[in-house]
Length: 257
Image (cartoon, rainbow, N blue to C red):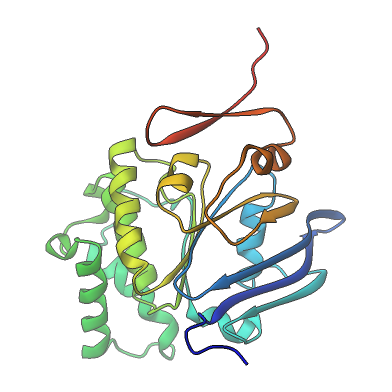
């Protein structure tokens, strides 16, 4: 019998195969994510990280295997997932403010053309407060810095009231100082929501997440925070040096002289 203290499994992936047309990208993936875990996945470009997120969001059906979200099918369980994409393209001149961007996160909880309610507005305000952006709610989104925009997009995901937050390279377009601030924010949010993120920044993996895996068609994941050179080398399929100068750590492939 499962102990009451045992965290609930919120994502369950069993023997998953997935890809596009005749190309297989993910092969025999097994992943169990516990409630309030903070999972970081690294791996080379084309290794299948974004493909895995598409499967979890129900945007790409598996060719084999099963995926369960909070014990439900992906179709039923994806409503509990908040998603922050890698790059959000937008027209900087488009007249939309921070408040309205975050309020878009409430669209999935209402009928077409239904008005926003006071409860919706309370949720939007709380989501902005959680990412320290409530004071800028009237600011045009195009006037914000890259780090501020990313906080707004995280708030938009939080406005869906998710149990799970998926992030695809959440700091790809910001500098190291802003990146640190965003990951500190995610660490605070992890007190209330399960997080799974994709990142090429091994410093983030070693400094912030609770469990770590390497994905390159196959998933090397053991449900703990240890990132070994062997795991990284298996994922990247080339010799890897883990070079640390305090914190953060960085990964570099072996270079020929």
